[in-house]
Length: 89
Image (cartoon, rainbow, N blue to C red; front, side, top):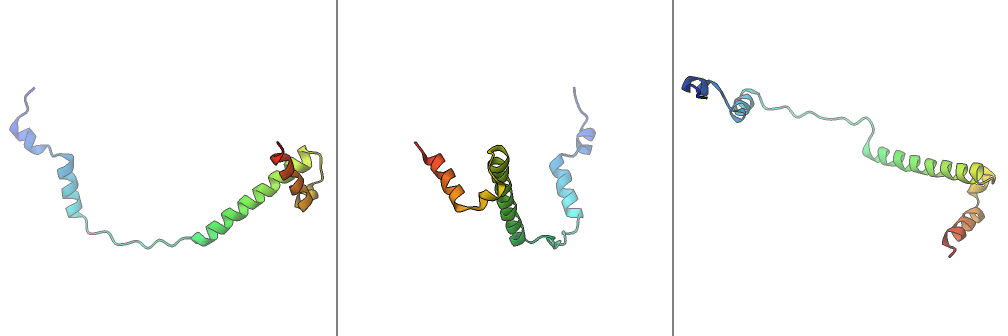
């Protein structure tokens, strides 16, 4: 399979095409990105969602599955009892 020299000259490598393309383009103008939700607000939202999911999980686990009252998950004695059950050897 031989290739003519004229065909070889016509075929350009990918690198050559990239160089030519980059020379033709004008330099990109810096685009300023405006965030809809600032980073500090995202962190607060994530913390609140974690708190809500833990509270909902405790309410379902203790109140519905465990047979207790849902409002009891907000008392200190309930959490002390849960910690004692976990640390019991």
